[in-house]
Amino acid sequence: MNCRIQVVVIAEDGSRETREIQTIERKDLKPETLGLTLAEGKAILKEIQKIVVQQQISSGLAPLRPCPDCGRLRRSKGYHDLSLRTVFGHLTVKSPRLHHCECGSHETSTFSPLAELLPDHTTPELLFLETKWASLMSYGMTAQLLEDVLPMDEPLNAFTIRRHVWDVAERLEETGTNYRFPMVH
Image (cartoon, rainbow, N blue to C red; front, top):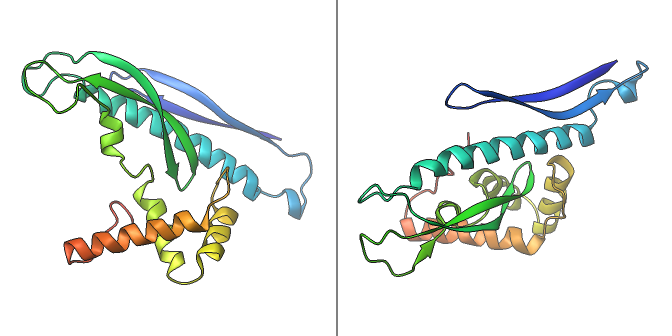
């Protein structure tokens, strides 16, 4: 038996693009071959995450290209790689650098809208899981647990988790309220 896993991306204009994720092949029905392995599940989730993130960035940054003041398209200075940590693995995405429009004054001549949107380079959901588990066990054990269950392609660092917990604690102190992780249920 072969199961082919695909993602169909439907653009705003209705056009469709099918992307292959993985083919699962099974010959025998045995307990150890029943369903997906953890490794297969992690690989599939990481690939789906990559496609969804790329599509969101592409469609989400398009409206930011025109100047909000005069409407002219801002010139591109090129792209740089932006490292993004998600619950489904580490991704490297292309981040455009745009020139500020000449209709106003700015402190810098260029900016990266994606870098401004993602200053921590870590999704709130991953921060939530790191903080939650680090409150229950050591940073090292938290790193190991998250590596075991999430599709991480490189080892998590206990020091990084500690720093993330510290950053969240500082946000709590600054706001004086309970910090709520966006879109985490």
